[in-house]
Length: 328
Image 1 (cartoon, rainbow, N blue to C red):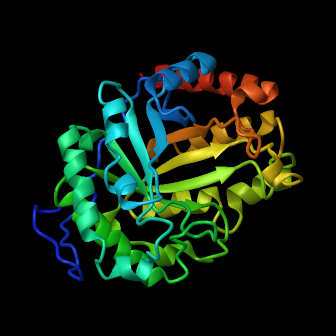
Image 2: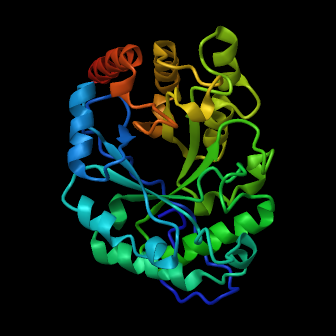
């Protein structure tokens, strides 16, 4: 619902129409915490979110998922996700590629509107599912990094692509919400991620992906760099406010796995404490946050694998629940 677009037919190369954005409703707070909170769970089913809720002592408000990105069918028709979550109460966040990773697709072609028909199909499927008003699309996440096929080496192409995608999808499902999500810090693909800002009419949330590494929060200096460094957490929190948008964190967590060997903080309770401090500081403008609860050895951030951090996480969740009760 970022663009509040009129229902219209969009042709390739035609810039999608846009009107003034309407602030979206926040995800419902099933957790009882002072802000909406949830998780990524590798099992994309409501029962996994229920298990996570039991682990931490608070239900999930948000379920972060990923659609496939090998072909257009996986991107434009993730109907299995909507079917799976239709009867659940969480807000569904779908992390979606703007085009398939293989097959010669590109930001430049997307910027010319070449893929509009696929995104109209996405909108049609979202509307048909009845889930559009409960779905956040985290489109082209971490675009300032080099590891994604949609890396914004050319930010003009990225902006035009984003606008075509949002316009096309919302022509069929205006209730969708859109999360413009950067990777914390200076990106290797785009050093100033603000150059890829699509405009407030096309965005609902300003998102940050951030983990305990590069640098790890094992020292005061490490946390200060994550928080106050160039394009750090506070930078993006302030950016969201300036744009009149709420902040989101669809990916955050520990990173003890082998992929970041020597650069992650391990089973780091201090990281949990500091991140919850950041959430409290920004709770008035925090749309949602979701812990990345992955047991994959490359990442190994699952709470079940990190007992010290898990204990601190549970403690901080209880504190966030008490904070919500005080506000009442």
